[in-house]
Length: 244
Image (cartoon, rainbow, N blue to C red; front, top):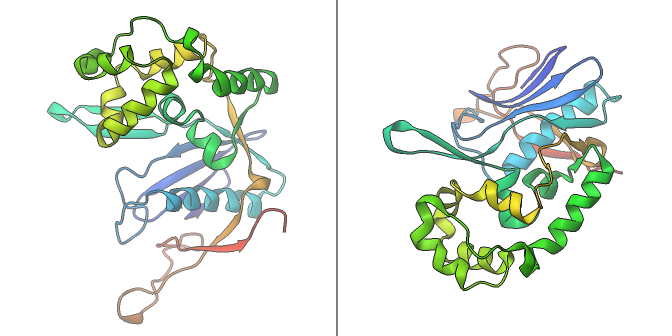
């Protein structure tokens, strides 16, 4: 990890989380685990370890800058893959995860909300009701390259929620690739065009605290720090939970 006056970075061979420290604001500007290297053993971090890694970065903010309690999300994280001719594709966590889970990824994992509380209340009312409202599902919808597979499922479904349940059940392993062409339009329809690309915020005081310890390397030897603020391998140990 690296703690500097204007940024905090967490990772191993690669820095996979970056938090920018501005004069009046604190931003999560980068979260990416796709390339691996978040630990020196080059294991790709997934699932709960991704959440722990982000919380470790938040813990460093709280440790070094206790006055900074809100982190604003500026990153464009998501599920990415490489297609033909090495073309890069991504379904972002904002719209893509929201469509599949009725919450954004940061909302579900970190309790994120919009900075505009009134807009967030409207958004949540829509998220809680519109997926199951037949009036929000138009008669015909274009699924782009997945038209042949998904149009029949759509036509036999009464609501977007019913369609998405069938879609996830049938195409679980391919779901992100199959939704690339249409997920943004689906979110637009379900949320009546509500702008959800607002500044989102996380109250990091509500998150668990983690500390990072240097681990032992091969044959019991301890890896040395590369600098006074750099630990080669993030090892995640709960120091205390929020509110304790």
